[in-house]
Structures are given as C-alpha cells and as structure tokens.
Amino acid sequence: MAHWMNIRIKGEAAWPEKETRIRFGGHELLLKPATKNTDASVHMDIAAISETEALTLINRFLSVLSWCDDVPVENLYGWSGTQAPVAMPRNTSRTVGTCIGEYPFYRDIEQNPKAKLALALYREALTVNSVPFSFLSYFNILNIFWKDRYEKGSNELIEGIKTTLPSLSDKEAMDRIKQLTETQADIANYLYESGRCAIAHAYSFPFVDPDDVVDLRRLSQDMWVIKAIAEMLIEDTLGISRSTLG
Image (cartoon, rainbow, N blue to C red; front, side, top):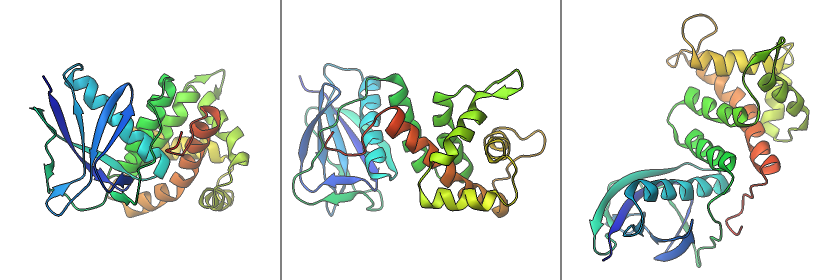
C-alpha cells in the first residue's frame, strides 16, 4: 500500500511548472508546482523506505538544486501517511522559480561522502538567515579538504587557503582580496582568525558580535573569498557539475 510523504518547499531554484516525476537516489520524486492556493512541494512514496531516509534523500536533492542555481532552497517539512500525494496549502511567499517547459533534471545523489557533505553545507550557507553562520558553513566546506590543526607551527587549513587565493577568478572575491592586501599581511590567517575562529568562539578577542553592523559588513565582504574557495573545491577538486543535466 502506498504511503506518501508530502513536503513543502521554499526557495529560488528552478522548479517545474507542471507535475513532474524524476528519479533520484534510486527513488521516484513527484514535484508539484505552486498554484494560487498551494505551495511548491515534493512528494515521495515511502512504503519501502523510512521517513528519516526519505527526508535525507529529499534534502540531498534540494542541495543539488541549491548548488546548480546558487540559490537558497528550504525543506519546510510537512506530513506523511496519505495514500496519494497531497498538495501543500499555501503558507509561504512565492520564491520558488518556475521552469518554463520541460524540467531538465538528470542528476543523481553523489556517492562520495565528501561531496554529499559539501553540497549540504553549501545549501546551508545559502539558506541560513545569519551572515556569521553562512560564513562558517562555507568555511566548513574548506575544512572537508584541509585539517584544522596546528602541527609544528603550521595549520593545514590556513596553508590551503593561502595556496588557493592566487587561483581565484571571481570578481567580488578578487576585489576583496585586493582591499585586504592594504591592511593584512597574511590574508589566509586573517580569514581564519577573524572569520572562522571569531565566529566559533566568544571568550576572547577577536570575536564576532552578530548585532554589530561593522562585523556583519566585514564578514559579508570576506564571505566572497571563502565562498569562491569553497566553490572551486567543490567544482574542481570534487568534480561536481553545476548543471542539472548531469
């Protein structure tokens, strides 16, 4: 007997304008568009899978969309147990983008654990309503590749940033690096101590005050650099395409 899960979606990624079925992670997902009275939603028959596994699978799908379109996409949850897919009554602002015509999605769940985690953190960074936490999520992607530990006076994470900075081509990131060279002798160490550490710790200076607009503006500018590094690592090192075609 069918046992459907019905999940409300909020975000800015392209979404089909008509009901569309796709295969992802070995399961079929039904995508419903927003209408006058309903929100965009994703539905899955979970008769052969647990609710926890199904929700994780849907999150993985949303993370791929977030990565491909570079936009936030949220799982607002819903309910399960219906014998057929049930559209979600309108309850959100209309921010899911509409894809005119056929919905070109031919991606599958990433098999590499590092790739899964990187995409999840990327969507979190885009979705979370906090500049400091968004910065930290991007920085955590870097930590997937480089160990954050001082050994013999050197930190692999800081050194990784340092070697990557010259390879960045993103305009906003390059502009921010140029600005930082005027005040910072070691940009990689600055991004680590005044960004990552300052957000994660509040015992001693430097720390980030989420009410202080000076801190928020600085982190917003620095985030261009950290995001650009994260994107380069995901795309080049992990080889993850930004196309929904595969």
